[in-house]
Amino acid sequence: MESAKTALIAGASGLVGSHCLQLLLNDPRYSKVISIGRRPLHQEHPKLKQLVVDFNDLTKVQQSLVADDVYCCLGTTIKKAGSKENFRKVDLHYVVNLAKITAKNFATQFLVVSALDADPESHIFYNHTKGEMEQAVKALPFTAVHIFQPSLLLGNRQEKRTGETMAAVAMRWFGFLLRGPLRKYRPIQAKTVAKAMLEAAKQDGGGVLVHPSEQMQQYAA
Image 1 (tube, helix red, strand yellow):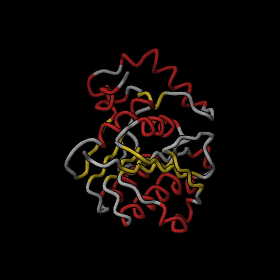
Image 2: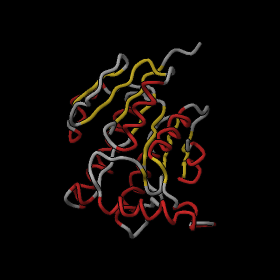
Image 3: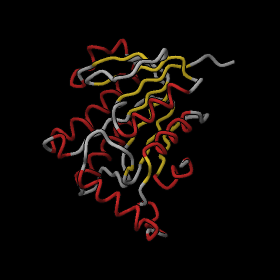
Image 4: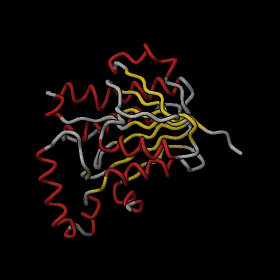
C-alpha cells in the first residue's frame, strides 16, 4: 500500500482554499496537511499543521515547506490589494516564489488556481498577470503542474465583493443563455474547483495539465 502523503496548501482562508482544505483533511491519501498563511486559521485537526508566514520572504520557512503535493489557492483583487503593483505581488510573485521553493524541496505536484482567459500576451491586466504566473510555474521542475482556470467563482466569501456578487446573481438568472463558445463563461462553484484539484492530484503521469472551467463542472455536486 502506498504510504500516505503530505499536502501543503496556501490560501486556505479563501473561497476555493477553504473548501480545498476540508477535502484534504478528509482525504486518506494525506497523513499531514500543512497550511501556510498570514494569520492562523480558526481550526484544529490531527492532520493539520499551521504555519504563519510572511509571503514577502518565504525563505525564512523554506525548510518547513516540504510536501508531496502543493495546492496554491492564493489570490486577491486590485480593490482589496489597493494597487496593481500589490495585486501582482500576491497573484504573481507570491505564487511563483512558493512554486520555486517547493520545487527545490522536491515536491512532486503543483496545483494552482489561475483564471479563465489567462494569457501572458493579453492586454487585460488581470489576464496578463495570471498568464505570467502560469508561464513561470510551467517552467519549474515538478513532475506535474496542474493549472485550474475557473470562470466567475460562486460561494460564500468572508469579505464582500460587490461587483462579483452582482455578477453572480446575474449569472444565476441568465447563465443558461451562455451556450456554444460562451458556455465556458458560466460561473462555477468554488467547491467544484476544489474537488477538481483533488481529483487531478490522483492522476498518474506528469507534465503540464490545464483544467478549464467547463471541464471542472463535471465535479459539481
